[in-house]
Amino acid sequence: MASRRVLIIDDEEGIRSVLADLFQELGYDATLAEDGKSGLKAALAGTYDLVMLDLSLPGLDGLDVLRSLKEDRPEVPVIMITAYASMQSAVEALKLGAYDYITKPFGLSEVQMIAERAVERRRLIDENRYLKEQLRLQYGFDNVIGRNPQVQQAYILAAQVADSSASVLILGETGTGKEYVARSIHYQSPRSEDPFVKVSCAALPETLLESELFGHEKGAFTNAIARRIGRFEMADGGTLFLDEAGDMTPAIQLKLLRVLQEKQFERVGGSETIAVDVRIIAATNRNLKKAIAEKQFREDLYYRLNVITINLPPLKERKEDIPELAGHFVEKYCRETGKHIEGLIPEAMCVLESYFWPGNIRELENCIERAVILCHGRRILPQHLLFSEDVGPLAAPKASSCVPKPLSEVERDHIESVLSYCDWNQTRAASILGIDRKTLRNKVREYQLGTEIAGASSDHAAKTYR
Image (cartoon, rainbow, N blue to C red; front, top):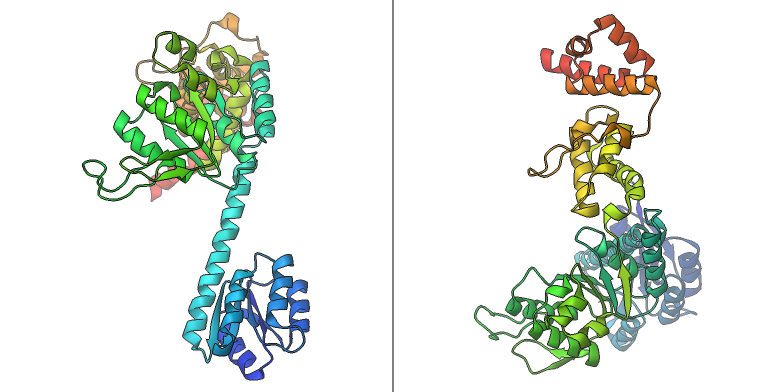
């Protein structure tokens, strides 16, 4: 691992020497500068994890160096070195972006403690920036899987509204990817540096949901032993995602309407009015127009939430996307399990395309995750496709629903299926296939199934002679 680097800018040779010795003991490469001009030049020319900067320097003083450094390298933590007589300048340095300051004479343990805190803070900032960038990439609109026109239109609309602060209502059955769309809008918006906060409106009773959304003051109700910040405050500057918003009670709907209209609220049991800047994205699988007609959902709230509506079709209406989605999930769970699975055999894909998918994409993902765990060969077979207990293994589709294949491909898939069923035991597989073991070995070589056989043999040997 590369050494960390520190730049020490001080006109006193003794200070430079002491600090250089300290940081070298801590594993840093130390660069030294004796005046502001050479120090600033070194700072802008190199890459440093930390800068130790004296306030009183000949020529270009410490504050001037700090100003220039923060303009060009704002992420580098700077610790000022000052005397008690220069405390006012030290405070000014903090306002300009210095991390902290030490006063002469200083203890080396104090310098070490402040330096470690400064470098750790820099590491956390860099890590946070990296994670946010990964989220932006993960939820980029160019990652959309699917050729279905409705899906494409939904994400085109999401991309168009991302730059605004308009409320968005996402409609679709459970498991169709509503939260993914909401996160995509947030992480591609100007609010991406601020929080994305999710609340499941159906998971909590009314009193708890009110406290969850708006927070509460100490003593507001039984067990309210301390003030609690609500999700609206947590999401200030960012996005609040109201999942299953159609399940909110009338009282919660009324309070939410006020927040949308006035951008402010009070905590439960409190009198202080709190102003927030929050974008609302709501999602529901309910028919809200029907709920309005039945007096179960406020019409005025519906129009506040429904500035932009995005509809996501169920998976049964976008079956042309199943192969690509399945392939994506195979790759995902192969990465997690360390397996090397090429995909599904055609019969297995035919099974997926013939199923009605009541749980939509979420159910497909669960199905593929189980299949990857159960599969010990190069490709997923129909018997690896298991669903919930009430459905069980997926039944093979009618032959007419599958595209006819060459005889060699059928033979290869059947041999692979039998070998997988026998846990790659060639003797058992040959017996079931009605051929001798030599013929099976020839077929294994012909269809390049030897990797699994070798792996299974190695595993068997390891178990036998361990």
